[in-house]
Image 1 (cartoon, one colour):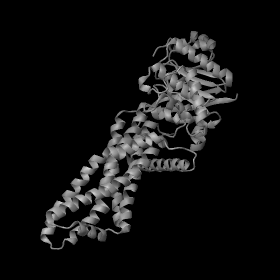
Image 2 (cartoon, rainbow over the protein chains, first blue to last red):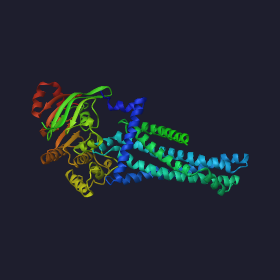
Image 3 (tube, rainbow over the protein chains, first blue to last red):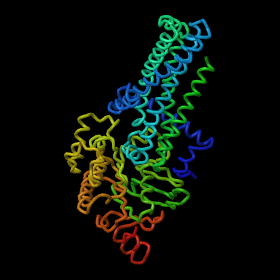
Image 4 (cartoon, each protein chain N blue to C red):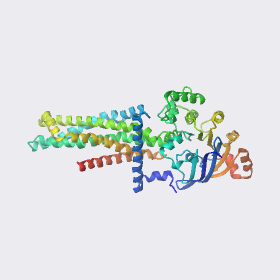
Length: 264
Length: 245
């Protein structure tokens, strides 16, 4: 005999069966979204442009000031930390080489991933949970509208685009702040900084640095949906969905990054 | 009987409680069924099963010739195109305008813009929603929201309408007008209607077949006249008909 829905929903939070259900739901969610994009490409469906524009604003533009500030702060902190190394070593190129790899390959993608998870991921999970709590999700279903495509379709696309854009922006801002600090405090010329950066980060590294945030974005979107869609009619589900999304997304970002490091 | 809905031996457990207890019920195509019972009788649960929003703990639910639990996404999508629903408590999308809510069932059906506009105009006129097309649901009265939900449920011309909480948010005149509209739909294209309510006195005159549900069990299934006769000898039916919550 099948268990009631409420019990099944609760079981998502615990045990190996819950994990399997979550993975299954994530896979169905991804398949549904890819199906939507294929239909759009084939001219059989259309993108919800207002929802896409709202998601772009929410994912990217609304976090741009905070992101810029964080990127500047990161560059200055790293510059300050590197200063002592420059004082001990008379090899200015060496710390820049190490910093270049750390900033471009690790710090920037992880930072962008966490910012996207905290803003867009949580917003997506709360929206999906909110639709379930208010009964609007049922309204979508009985109207023949796939709730995953309706809620996630435009948001995932926006998350992918803005993750790419934010990675470029945060990378440039952090490197500029870092280079400026080193020039002003230690006297490392910007030309030397750029030269060392080019030497430490090759094309494959750059590709990896740009691809990682996109993979993070997909993971964040799927985790948000897995936490938001089965939230149930209990208003507490909103808070649970948000908390689980942040924890799950940050964990997934770090584990995915670890896999990249081990495979390198 | 050419059945629109066949429910056989359905059990539904909610939070460890048996909320539907072996319900068996059939509705023929074009028939109207009024499902009445007090709060907590299981009416909403039963309508959710008919609409495929939940799966039963045990038993089978066949709607318009299809067993819902076995349907894939594509078949389910086509099936949804034949069913309209008005849900208890409201299910309009708060972030969309009335017009966008109305057009939801036509999304992805291949309907052209002109066809969608024509269908929306007809629905707006039929349900007296003129001037509200650009409003958000939170700016509407409960009665207006229910009319928008009904318009959305009918805009794709379903063959089955499931309406949970028929009189919710409607005054007696609104109930009469709504029933007149549904009669018109029935006369024009044989709409099957399953409606639930807990205020039977206002609805028994509609002439629909009546099923009485109480604490998850089906107490009665027959005509309003037969219900009156049966109630004379059964205290539990009299209690439900008196409209006790």
